[in-house]
Length: 306
Image (cartoon, rainbow, N blue to C red; front, side, top):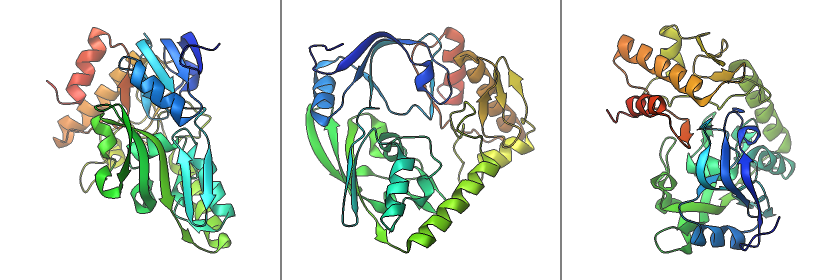
């Protein structure tokens, strides 16, 4: 279907199968831009649309989203010039990791097992194995929601920190990012990537097991997984959601879990650590969509709004 915005859209689009958690209701309308011009037009003309990438670190409400959603899955073009990779926001990062490997470029080895896209990786300054997005980031093109213009942001503008960037302040929406990598021996890059994949296999659920990645961020100088394991949450189950037995900072969807199941389980995990260690863990997963009264209260507690 073609709309006045010159891009594909679908009405009452079910988001469940678009997410790594396999949880979520319908969006009133879902738009699928395939280039920066279409994306910018949607951001200019739609009223408060929600932008979603590969939906790998979000919990989408089982009641759905009461509004327009922009899905960036068709924003999947990239180019490589010398040591520089420029990629649109919807490109899946494992693909870029493999492309860099094939060209003997180092800096993206840590992303080989990630389920996300470039937009999400830059948004949260994704990191692992002593590498992060900010290490190679040069600049990006972003949409400024205050001026409705496309702007260029450099590394300093991005205000990168641990799992943080200026994109989280909701003014700017990433369109494409440019990163500069370092030449290295392909064999060495491949070896690092294989180690990273082995590490992930031992400590994280496989991508075929519905999950949203790490549930809570690491507190300063500590590990959320360590605290949660010591608090005894492994294996806890509410509804169709269960804390993974392999690592206490992951929730897996074992039996048609709802967003309420996950929210209740997250709150239980949060309270176990808070009660035992007086540490308030910060959710890394973001809730998107219509909240029930119970979900609203649970998330207000975990986000320290009450």
